[in-house]
Image (tube, rainbow, N blue to C red; front, side, top):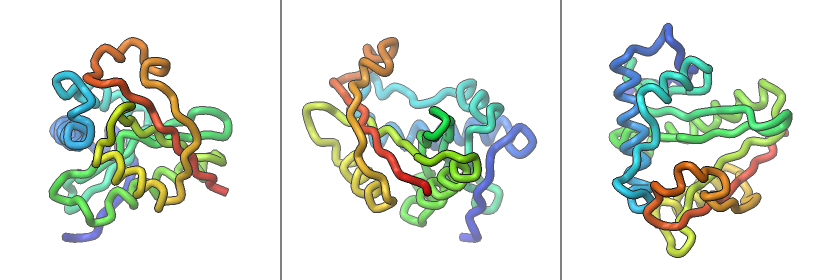
Length: 178
C-alpha cells in the first residue's frame, strides 16, 4: 500500500463512478455498524445527497493509488462548534489508520476555520448494547472526545424516526480543539 492522501473532494477531483463507489463505502460501513437499528437497513446516503455535500465542500476523502478508500463529512454547527460525521472506510483498508487520518483532517479543518469545539453524534440503541457502537465509543474517547449529552433520535429527526427498527438516541461527543 502506498501513502494515503487526504483532501477535500470537489467536482474537479472526483468522478461520477467515484461518487458511486463512495456511496457504497459509506452505506456498507453504516450497514455493518447500524444494520440492526434500521428497518430494511436504511441507506445512510444517496448519490444525490453525497454529490450535494461534495459541491458544498463538506466531504474529505482518503485515497490510495487514486482509489477512494474512505471519507468524512464536516460541517459548521455554530460560531464555535464544528461537526464531523459519516466517517467511513473501505472494509479492505480497515485497521490501517485511515479513520484517524480522516478525523485529524476534520479537526484541522475546524481549527483552521476558527472553531473551538468539534462535535460528533453516535447513534446508539436505547435498550441494548450494539458491539460496533461500543468499539466506536472507546475509539472516540481515545481520540480525545468526551461524552457531552444524549438526544433522542426522534427529537432531532422526527421525519425519519419511522425508519428505525428500535428506539435510538444520539450520544453527543465534544473535543476542545484549543
